[in-house]
Image 1 (spheres, rainbow, N blue to C red):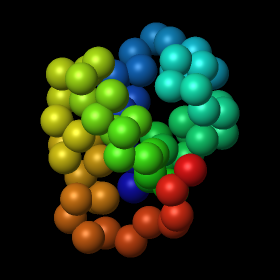
Image 2 (image 1 turned 90 degrees about the vertical axis):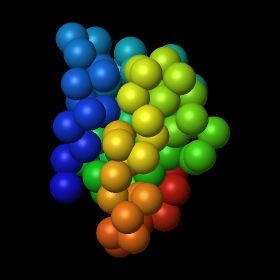
Image 3 (image 1 turned 30 degrees about the vertical axis):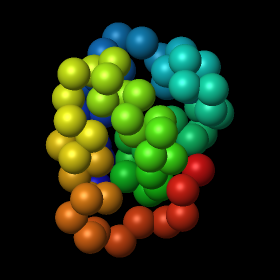
Amino acid sequence: MKRAELIKFRGDKSQADMAKKYNVSQQAWSSWENGDKRPDVTIMKQIEVDSGIPMEVIFFDVFNNESLSSTV
């Protein structure tokens, strides 16, 4: 399940740019966008602050008991 709000937040920046901003690998950012994994709650909160979109909206699956792999 792709996370459309996270992809929209990234805009025209590359995944590598976003990964650098949040101090993670590009692969980690990609796995978040693809819905394969989720970031640590502190990073989710920072994304919420930076984007102005509630983390419960961006990471809907996490907050609605849909299965995910472990955190990155």
